[in-house]
Every structure is written in C-alpha cells, then in structure tokens.
Length: 101
Image (cartoon, rainbow, N blue to C red; front, side):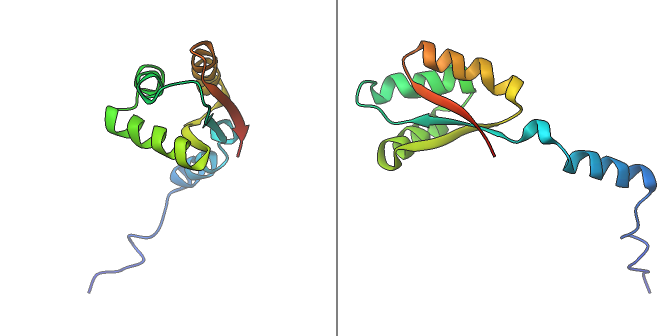
C-alpha cells in the first residue's frame, strides 16, 4: 500500500518558497484598457501585440471586450513591469491605467 501522506509532506525549504510566492505584493497590479471613440480596432490590436506581447487572437479578443464592456484587463504583474507599457499605450493615444488589485 502506498503511503499517501508521504507525497503530501513538504520540506521547510518548499514551505518558505510557497510563503514567499504567496506574499508577492509586487504582482498585484492590473493594466486596464478603456474604450474610446477615437482609436480603430486595428490600432488597438497592433498596440496590444507590440507593447503587451499579445498574440493577434488575444489582442482581438481584448479589443472586443473593451468595445463591448468598456474596459478590459490586458496585463497583470508588478508595477515596474506595467508602468512602461501603460506609458507606451498612452503615447499611442490609448486610455489605460494601472490599478492595484
């Protein structure tokens, strides 16, 4: 008979790593793109591909969500990751902001 508890135990090293991963306050931000009446779908999709590294399908889906719902979370992560992307999108005329989750 296999000891089921043997495979559920963790070393102190793994537990510490899990705790540190769980306390990732540095990853609790979302970059939100808002709808506007100015930019074309093509421009929004191209910006999402270029600055967010979305593939074309993902960028199209985000563009449609923004169009129908008014906004969409387009990327999440640390503030230092999202801030330059937000600035680049703003420079391209898109309305985006970073929000704390």
